Length: 432
Ligand code: PSV
Ligand code: MN
Image (tube, rainbow, N blue to C red):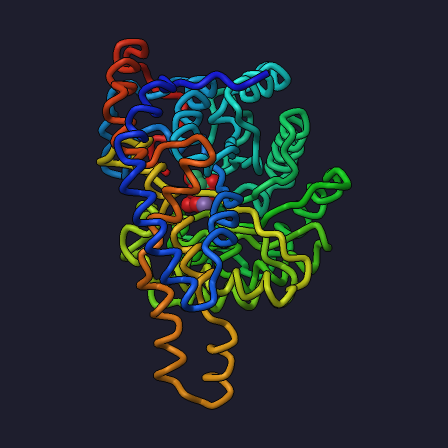
């Protein structure tokens, strides 16, 4: 069954036709330029086409800060409407075929029916996310003082059971991984015995780990602060690595780009985790100060490129157990989430393609010769290349839009949804 598409195919076709001749000229010119450097543009375009990143179900609703949330028109009110918005993003970019759900923000009464609904839209599911960082209506025990690391075994039991339930739903959805991020930690020195809290977390995680199906993995997501402002139980990649190692080979470390203290060399974190076979994958976003959850590539595209440079290097040198899962984790406060997510997917693909253009042989010789300037110039040459025609050609050939934002705006999708989806209390993250 071919997937039903939310945006009129005719509109995509006609808008593409108007841009096609110029794109072909630009693509040919870029192909000539790359050929002079010994690069076959077609092989790069094929890799660009194979690139994909998962959309967070919570990302299609308007986000907010701890001060306020300003809802946008036509916000999705349930997981089915979220899937519809995700389908728009994939239809136009052809780079986002999977959705990463978050439970219980995404209320699932019939997981098999949900999977069918996704398939009908041409979508599948990526890692499922558990939520023990806030209380849900009717929940017997509170997570105010922690969840998997709580001092009370009954609270830990409840949090473990929730994670195991997430695995169960994820199995039916066709997912193969569980992402665990906890808000556990302390706001005051002395509030918590730091090592006892980690022991309790590890003990709870071991029980979740034991419930993983054979072909599943569990992704541990670290974060240095917020909501705990003195110490978090899993603050950094070192703790994450130690925990993943203690748990076993199915446990890996997930890097959310915003979960590092200012100045952290994130590409180095990526390199280390890849080197030791423990890189789970990513929650992509961008930031200026902290966990800002801004659009990927909006603030520091060079850092994003350097992350992908490490990923391409790891893939080419055959790093152990290297199979990173790519997901976005952003909060859209002032933009239309569909526009932000389309742009982010394209920026991620851009960073990947630029990283593919790095002349690794040349880079290695400059590194061996300790020629710092030329080594840096080699990276910069790839970063400054305008790979836009490759990205647009990959989208066109895959049935997407040469200019996704333009088609989306012309389609009137948001306006239609504003009428179909009258504002309701959104059953999703307001503040993420
Ligand atoms: C926490 O800041 C986080 O990055 C985790 O991935 C959560 O699941 C997500 O944001 C949404 O709050
Ligand atoms: Mn995250």
